[in-house]
Length: 205
Image 1 (cartoon, one colour):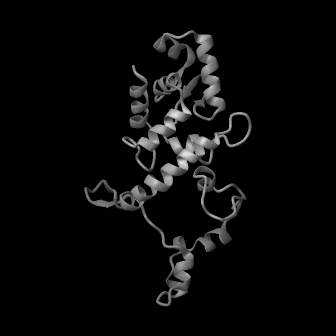
Image 2 (cartoon, one colour):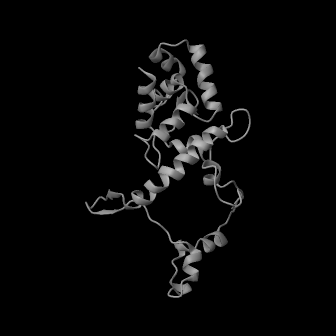
Image 3 (tube, one colour):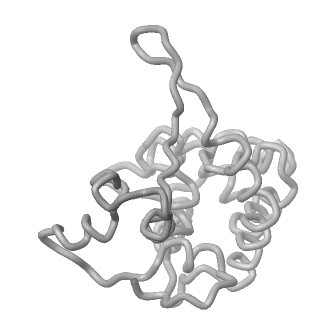
């Protein structure tokens, strides 16, 4: 299996909101994040398996493979259960986004963050705006509906002269949602961490 085949297969197997199957930018991200050998290992972990099972499948020394698996786990690229390892298919959010490794010796490099930012601002945003909100999904009744709902900004609703406060739906009023929440946390904004942001808003929100 050639290096090209490995990265092409990774592009086809991972799930990412902006697509990426044929994207040169997305491929560059994968090439920076994974060596060809690591990519090959991850491809075999789309369905979780144990290290001994994987060693037989890849014809590798089990001890050497265990070290590679541990390294991928430490970098946040694999999930580890009691006996099995698995490669998360929700690629961005699991590997780079909110739950990614952002501090310590295994932190995501600035180069990888820059590549994600380039991909996000030049491909993902346009793809998301133009296609995702209008993607259709089947319902049990055979009818079609939007797969995604785009909520209007509460600030825009409040400033609209044609909308009275009582007309704003509860699910549209995020200020109300926060006020009524039983618990609140202060945490890093996932998008601002992930996309190496070009905004002046605070990281902790």
